[in-house]
Amino acid sequence: MTEDLFRRLGLAEVNSGVCAASWIEDPGGRELASINPATGEPLGRVVMVTAKSYDRIVDRAIETFATWRTVPPPVRGELVRRIGLALREHKADLGLLITLETGKIRSEGEGEVQEMIDMCDFSVGLSRQLHGLTIASERPRHRMIEQWHPLGPIGIITAFNFPAAVWAWNAMIAAVCGDTLIWKPSPLAPLTAIAIQRIASRVAAEEGYPGVFNLCVGDAEETGERMARDDRLPLISATGSCRMGRRVAEMVGKRLGRTLLELGGNNAIIITSSADIEMAVRGTVFAAVGTAGQRCTTARRLIVHESLHDVFLERLIGAYGSLSIGDPWKNGVLVGPLIHEAALNQMLAALEAARAQGGVVVFGGRRLDRPGFFVEPAIVTARPGMPIVAQETFAPILYVMKYVQLDEAIAIQNSVEQGLSSAVFTRDLREAERFLSPEGSDCGIANVNIGTSGAEIGGAFGGEKATGGGREAGSDAWKIYMRRQTCTINYGSEIPLAQSVKFDVVPRQPPIGG
Image (cartoon, rainbow, N blue to C red; front, side, top):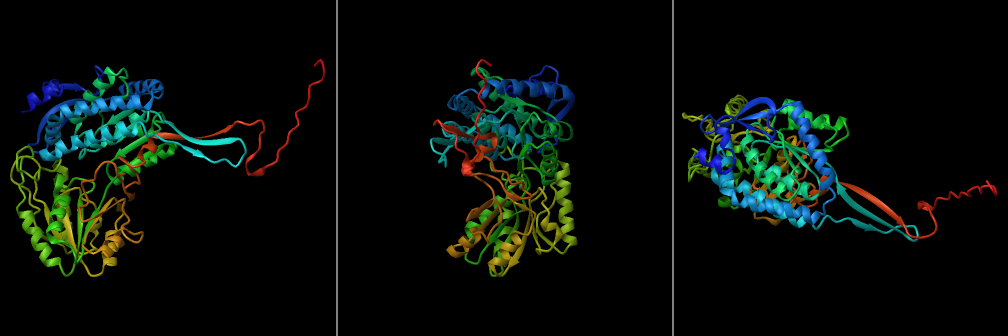
């Protein structure tokens, strides 16, 4: 299966040894193995960059930016449109590669490629809508405008759980904004990045701009921190844990650079007494176990009205019992593996902590006796004050709690440090509006009668508090990739000052003959 797939995606040489990470003949770094989490076996090996080869990549991005920023935005959009067409041609293959490298089920792997395609379409339209403003001036015969210019080479650091889509969220918009890109993918998914880079760089070269998209495979400690400290990169967009985000923010902040941070999420779903139980069960199960609980928007806490708690828990356990767990590339499988052994051990440790703090594991939590990193999704009855409930474990653990009044449920939801995604299931308009009000959810995403995960492009994605405050993939998120310039044009013959300031100067006349 992999041999033909790698050949179609231009990765054939990976099986036989080493694939150069950035089209540099010898990147010079250590070898990095890509592991299939469903088998525990390597898919291929990649050579990472060194400081020297990293500098070559950045120099290329800077050199290309000098030209790319002068290209009209609709022309940039045409390049992005062609990338979208190429992604359509390779959708099935790229989706399967994502499945093999990250453990996502086939529909989620292909869905991620579709998300890249959607971002291309969105960005093509955006290329004709990078609008500024005309502002009324208080001074006669003056006009004020705000306009936007390309920012520069952008650093993009992505995580394993969305190894393709998050790159596209940033890269496609930044490209039509006139920026060049340097992408450091997760070391857990380098082959997906290389396959996508081959497509993007081929299209860019055919359009005459081969240095717009650049790939830099490396680890977090060396390459990631090097990017964060690099004052040649005016913006670092980083997706990962809250701990990683704090580190990136500190390093970029010291050089007064910009950050766009998409970090952790300890997301909650509230089930009110008026909820449609069938809808709520379906929405909760996907939110809690999709991608084996390894989405930043995964539902990790379920807050159920006391009148529905027992019946809802029973229905939820029944739904979990019907989940098919296995090789994620096989039809009918709904739950694949965790990404590696460490993630599995962290889940088991969290369940032990939950038991020690008074929680009861009412379903799942057992490691499967088979190759790979498989575990049953777990349901734990818990209390809001349990310390483990406030921690984000990147695994399929759902903590179920009771509430009496809606204000109590909202307070429980908002009590964690993260503020990414939230949801309420209700048929009461007043409850829905209360949840969406300034007194309601404190998250960047608030949903009614759908789960916490599965966001569409077009709406700005991101969260508050320890989630980082970043926004990507929609609305006016494009502005982070550009620099704003306020311009004042005086078309008169006088120089009046703002705020009626008087500062009259009579120039001295030079002496005659002087």
